[in-house]
Length: 284
Ligand SMILES: O=C(O)c1cc(=O)[nH]c(=O)n1[C@@H]1O[C@H](COP(=O)(O)O)[C@@H](O)[C@H]1O
Image (cartoon, rainbow, N blue to C red; front, side, top):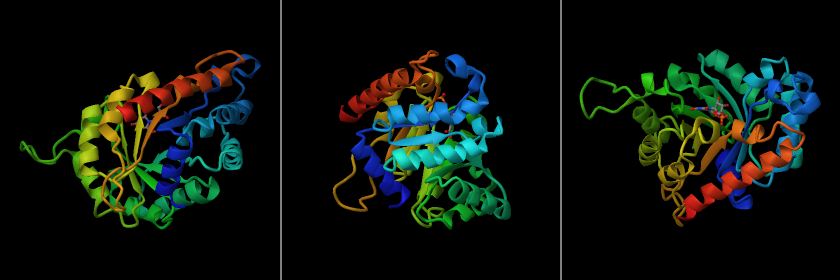
């Protein structure tokens, strides 16, 4: 199964559009684990175990592991997810972007070392910085397009020429990702839940691509507007050009729903509520 097929299967099996972000911060761990970077695996594994029937995908953020010299715990976590939730694809959030020869090493890191099903990438350096990832045709490569942070507007929302009607940078990228760059049909795009109008525009330009949509929960994005803007019912005919999956991602709101020993049960409750909210918007 390639990444898009994995997403379609997990959306159906877990009846979910919710991606759970794994951003472990030892300072926020519960009880006796607080401040203990040696518990990163235990914390994340408990969250995975509590939510594995609720998620379309998991998304570990590599910086939260590397900052604590916890790469071996990330390897352990990836193996754990494959073991207990083989039906839920894993996106390594690394936002890599570099010249081709270095990108080859990053691709190897994501797909061979960590066995990720997809990776997030910064497309700022152009197609040759993306191409090495396309040599793994079953894996997903998800390009930053219209990010959730306020500074996302600094570049991404600029027009390519100072002429009304000229595409904005994020629109140009969405079009390229849907067409010329998508050699093996494995590209996806990141669009922030904090900008629903732009999600709708990206969906117009990239009707079949998977969209990773962070920014609900802690960043205050509108979950309902996000689904309305990005989700389209798949048309019955194959290759109809519609209905790319969406993964609406939340990290802190799920992980730190409780600071107590009931953190995993609390994470499950928030994940259930968020999944239900997204599903109601999908049905509306
Ligand atoms: O690629 C991402 O996942 C990402 C893109 C983006 O535009 N905004 C964004 O917040 N993210 C990531 O999504 C997560 C957001 O976490 P919460 O705000 O806690 O839900 C972090 O790991 C960010 O690095």
